[in-house]
Length: 85
Image (cartoon, rainbow, N blue to C red):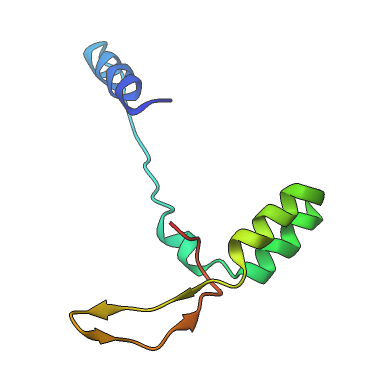
């Protein structure tokens, strides 16, 4: 449900003298801990195969990253966890 509609529904419930409650979960950080090899294995387990699995595998493997600030640059490391943004 879009947030706007949720707010309207909650307001209407309160106006009618009823209780209204919201539960908001932020899963953004949860994806920072996803191990790529486990994710790819689970995709197969749940029936993701063929071209779709190849796409995910290609997207998640052989990624590298580094940090730079001014003229300084960190060592380049493999990214094995998290979801690329």
